[in-house]
Image (cartoon, rainbow, N blue to C red; front, side):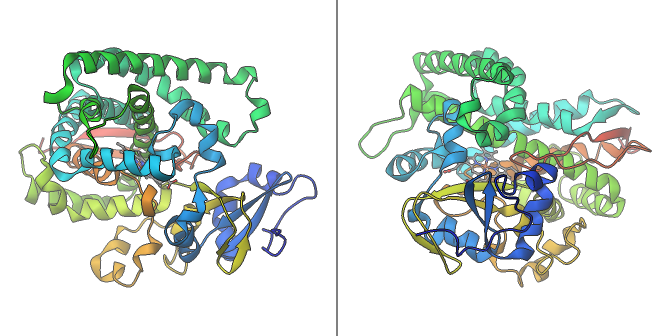
Length: 444
Ligand code: HEM
């Protein structure tokens, strides 16, 4: 069984494959691929990787034939860091832990996290001053870390953990995708020293926080770490300290840069589209008025949801990967066992057949009458199937509460003359610098 029947993507060079093309413009390559076909072969040097770009083929990999896949190389390479957390584990182990952890993201629990989010959004909004210039990407990066760590750890125990996350997580995020894709032979290079130091420190500090929380009696607490410690399956067994360490690290990786990126891009696009911003302000004023935002407001703010839907379409998760465990047919092509498969969510969400003028920011694409024509499996910013993002509602709630708290008080505009942000090639297409100037709104 070989992969020769699968059409090769354009621009391959003997020996190097598509590496030069990928190094030049990785996001450009990912988005152009959908026009070349629903299933393609990319050669990373001599290693073939199958890329699926259409809604049908993505659905076949993530849902329909999910049993023939495991997470594969991209996740194995980050395992020393995120261990066997939900994002990198498979099979019965994943199913059991997912079942234990899922209730922590039920509606009743989200209400508790909403209070923490609102508090942090208010602290952020209180700290700004009229005329101040910020880099929205940096500010939202720190904000997302502070907010998630505040829901993960109870305040009295978690301080050293919060400090470590604040310092170490940005170092780890910066190099994570590179580390995941680089060959193992390069692990000893000195460039990884800062990465390894930060990883070791963060895990050591978490170990301490887990031990202290377990000893303090977590049953009465509602922070995520205490809930992880109290979770029990049908047999009465819970998660071990090592498993909890993996899940904490995974949540921090999965739930900070992603949320920060969505918020920074949302602020940028709203600054470019005062008409859309005006609509949001009217809605927030009507629904929330002068009081603090609550979880009950979130579904009453559909204009914010549309803005977030559009931001995540444009700049959400770029890709994820899987590996076949047996021969499987995808998009009509037979793919042998042990093949690495890359899913280009980026290509899917910028498909001009579904999203005319796909690079344009247009939240109205998400008006109910227009979404009805788009099949649900075409929209997968949080993945699909058994590994679908566990934090999707958490992330939407956090982003909505943040925007509804900040926007009525502050107007954010790009610094005149500054260049538009570019998309960085990381796990999500987060922006490079987003210089913005802040003005206090007159009615506040
Ligand atoms: C806008 C923000 C977010 C985006 C775009 C996002 C995107 C994703 C995607 C695409 C996946 C699936 C990956 C795959 O199938 O390989 C995923 C999984 C996951 N996400 Fe998120 N995520 C976000 C926020 C969060 C938050 C806030 C948390 C936690 C608090 C979180 C925790 C997780 C976990 C634990 C998984 C693995 C689930 C499993 O495999 O069972 N994510 N996320």
